[in-house]
Length: 245
Ligand SMILES: Cc1cc2nc3c(=O)[nH]c(=O)nc-3n(C[C@H](O)[C@H](O)[C@H](O)COP(=O)(O)O)c2cc1C
Image (cartoon, rainbow, N blue to C red; front, side, top):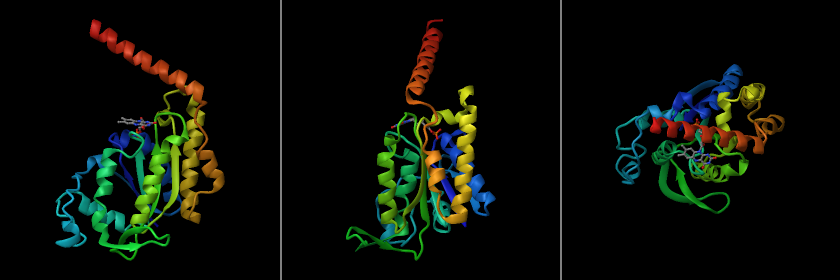
């Protein structure tokens, strides 16, 4: 099974998204999958120009000469693609959105009805990879991922695929082990991510038990807000005293 993760965080290797992907892929690789994480912020990805040349003049190929040629090859030859992004303004990052817009050559321009009677583009390829979503956000509360969940479901439908696994964690900045007291909690969360990777490769899904563990908050909400506000107060104070000195 070929699994390719596309990380849309501008922080690339230093991202919380990357921490999550690394652990999941470590489990998947241990279970025999061929895995790779690609940091989109290190790639040259221009924005789609909306010219539709990839549909008419050069069917299936974008006329922009950048890294998307090699990236789309990775997409279409994978069994599973992981769309990994931090939550930015309730959705994907700009980097990830540019990447997603450039999927257009993978579709045929003509329309057809899906099994539920909704319109979408016809297939260009016989097989498209399944989609998994991995995301983290800054604030506490899983409701922050509502838009993202729907966005990837709609995108998958349009590309004759489906979202077959999702891992979301709020208060994602905690993954960096900033609070020593939380070390065991973070270690256990990472272990669950690795287990999810193993389970996915072995059974095609993440078990309900592991999913449940992965959706447990890392820290009680009130305590998180108290500590986070203390942190921001401190940062703001230190900048002020720097400016006054
Ligand atoms: C431009 C921007 C927009 C953000 N928007 C949200 C948001 O809508 N909701 C939220 O909970 N966190 C938001 N965050 C916080 C990030 O999701 C959070 O810092 C995350 O841990 C970053 O992950 P990364 O290290 O993988 O990039 C935002 C951060 C930035 C820089």
